[in-house]
Image 1 (tube, rainbow, N blue to C red):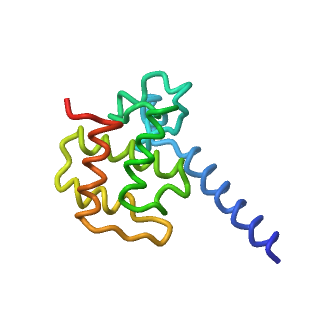
Image 2: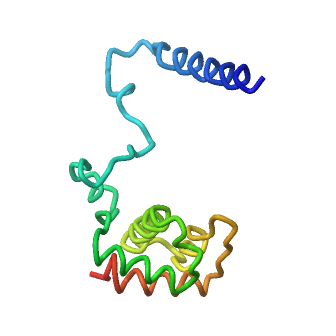
Length: 139
């Protein structure tokens, strides 16, 4: 039963994708079909500058990665159980800090509230302080 449900779901998604891709609005321009509002995921090794375009700092490695994880762990040790998730959240929070987002303490609290962990705005403030000391110092 599970295989049938999965197969049906995949078939529905593929059918929707094919229909969506084949619709022609009468325009000869390829620009409409090549642009996407969703950013592409890429690793730091092959990002080709995309990280700088989106405001994300490069993925930290070595001692810098350890420092970022320690700053996040200082707020709540469970946040670093999935280190990659914590690093991704930290990089995204840096983009918010450097991009002039409003209420960054609340944003950090929301961004790092995952895996059953709920943070307060005060926790978010502490995360921001740690990120400013490690991954994304204020310029």
